[in-house]
Length: 440
View 1 (spheres, rainbow, N blue to C red):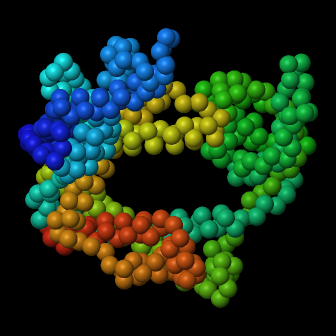
View 2: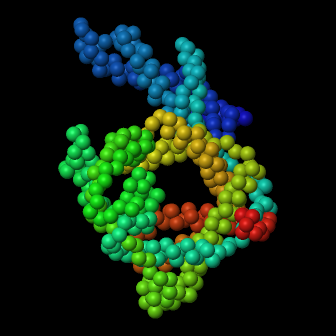
View 3: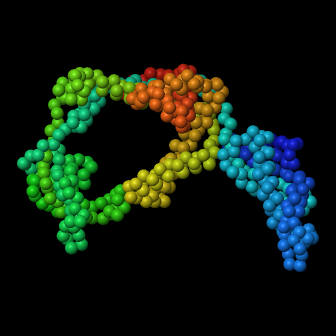
């Protein structure tokens, strides 16, 4: 698709081609008279300031100045004209560029119209289609007894105490141990001793050799344990290396987990019973499960919209998304003492690119629906949401309201509300089938 704009108020003839929803080719023609006028200005200034042996400043003939500086001045004139033409093109054609223009196919011949092309990416103007009656499946929100029991067990574990025992260590015990690596002389390097390290025997977080070596050991016993560090260990200095540790067992401590009864419930909150704890846990889990079901519905909405609306995404926006993610990956690896390999970057790009495309497609379509249906968020709705967030996080409402007013938090809240309102609008018009929890 192309469109010609004579741009009567400017010295440019502009033709816009749209090979992609996000791509524009701006074909620009510049009148020779305008170029020559701009060139003459620069030649006049250069002639006044140019210095040449045998001539006083400002008295050098313009032809001589032009012979020496003509190419440079023409380049400067062109560099001035390009942004002027670009500004005219985006204003007169209502474009929203997201990249700087790339200039191509320059035609610059004496006494002829100057022409060139500018290639840009623009924010696509999406018109959403067919967004009613989206076929969705809503999974039933169910909390099982074993889910509640799992939370209770974690609470019991968090309240466990460890008591010193005089017996061989067994799985679940806490081992208090001094770990001292052996030096090049095969003797313990006391400068690197890690005193009174605690580990739970049998835990997955331990190196398996420790779990094996310490099973059945007693306090006061000594043992040498060789640890082979994996190639992807978080400490780059240890990757792929083997280190032998001299281990001195200081104590064996037995884990004592509280009984699951009303006394345990009261230790969590005074006066409450075990039944009340179970009910509170179930209510919290149900709220989390309902949030998951909602997110699943939202994801189905996005998938259905993308399936029904063909849209291409500007490559530059995908690259911005990937670049941001790669920066986070580099940061995490740096914190763990690792470097990010080229292979890891390539794998990240391969996995993340389709995710980025999907997110951006969904964003553009949702924005189009919001615009087409005039779905707006009021100040009153923002105030209600501020109060909800304060209540959920136990913030002082007035202090949180002051915090929101100072930065970008209000914009973030408004964006969330706009997105939620759009999802709710689409869900109100969708064809939703109820499914069993097992199907979900």
